[in-house]
Image 1: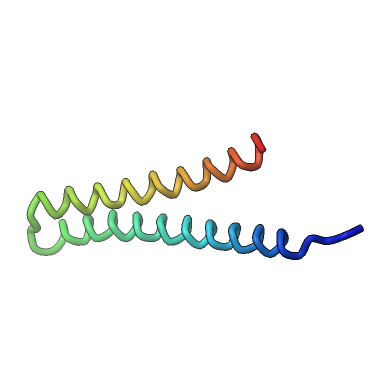
Image 2: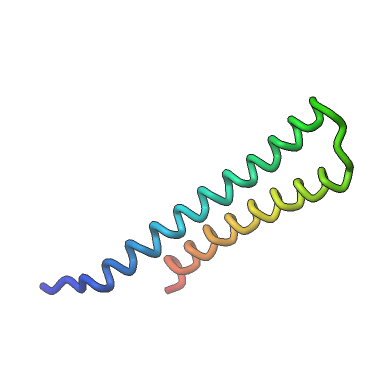
Length: 78
């Protein structure tokens, strides 16, 4: 039995990178949503900045979801 160490290393690096990316994207989205709530408690901010924060947070969550769904697709289809 032969172990293909190069392929094993590439699988490890891709899975590590995707896990870090998903965690970072979800953390950025949660920070974006929490800044929006904290700003509501403090001084009034412009509606444009709140809209941009919400859009960035939603984009981060959507990107994290796409990464996870792509991982499922690779596992199931391939």
